[in-house]
Length: 296
Image 1 (cartoon, rainbow, N blue to C red):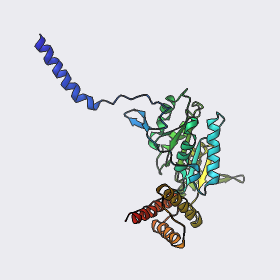
Image 2 (image 1 turned 120 degrees about the vertical axis):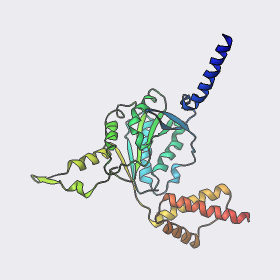
Image 3 (image 1 turned 180 degrees about the vertical axis):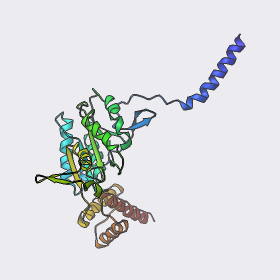
Image 4 (image 1 turned 60 degrees about the vertical axis):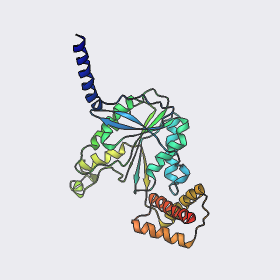
């Protein structure tokens, strides 16, 4: 009898050893006093919040030339933190102009006041009600952040977001807000064919229902912030700022001159754009090069 029992237990252990890698790992409850950010991770038909290690080195003062957008979003966020009415926000415009950086800078600014950030991908927006359920009655304030939100022609997923914004999210607890970034103001491409059925009735212009349906999505966001391509002067100001920041951290002595001006413009021309990301990349290139020369 003992031999049969031992054989059964050995076989059971072998089966469990083979099944264990296939089972989902146990999820620990997030300590939001210590964790500042998380990402919604889809798993099967459900999902979970994955804690993230985030850097708080991005400051609001690092965002040069977008003063109006920075002030408006900062004010909206402060209202949110103070328990006052605040709006979901859509940050749209040219790439690399500081949309995502502004949201990260707000986290660094207000983390001690209880602000937390949760990243959620566009394809997982239908899970927003599940995310919100986990945040009810928590003392912290949560910004649900969807970066690079857009929908291609023919996709109907944007209707899911419309229903979520009008339904479950607006009925969410007061400690939840949605911030999204996009290169498109209306999130969905507008085609010439969408305008073919516009008509005039008694002097009033009636747009095609397809156009109304698409525009209505961005209308769900109460706050729109527009980000535009940098002028050359704006670009050089951002380059100078980041070179100063990186040089001060490494003890590099430097000064702005005409040669540096030409190198920065040439770098941007080679990339085909002038924006904050390009300026930061050039600053890292130039400061790194000077530090390497100093070592040599």
